Length: 123
Image 1 (cartoon, one colour):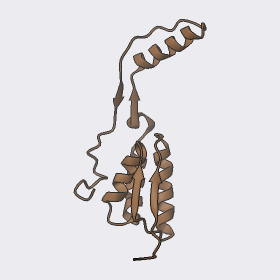
Image 2 (cartoon, rainbow, N blue to C red):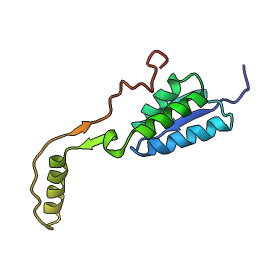
Image 3 (tube, rainbow, N blue to C red):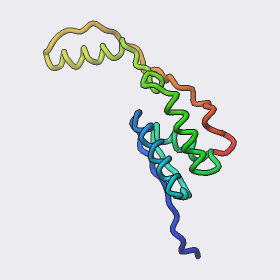
Image 4 (tube, rainbow, N blue to C red):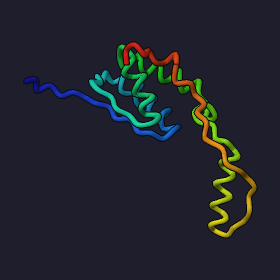
């Protein structure tokens, strides 16, 4: 039985938190940290897939930085304005504040998960 300690990385969700995680991964790579396992939720799962698919943490840091340099806020998630205003209208109506026109729609994913940053054969 090995007594060697291993390091795992848990990445939370939260949209732009993913860019912060990219910086943390870069810092961990620069310190020579070895990650044995990775887990994540939402954007953390996406970043985790990039880490898992990379040959080492340094390469993962390069890929994550390239991804987050490429992405803007509007590329992570596009909000259907009609849905947004419909929800605001309902909220304001419930609070008796005012009337805002709008109608139902949906949240639309904007970023294609078949990314050049993830080697799906390695995940």
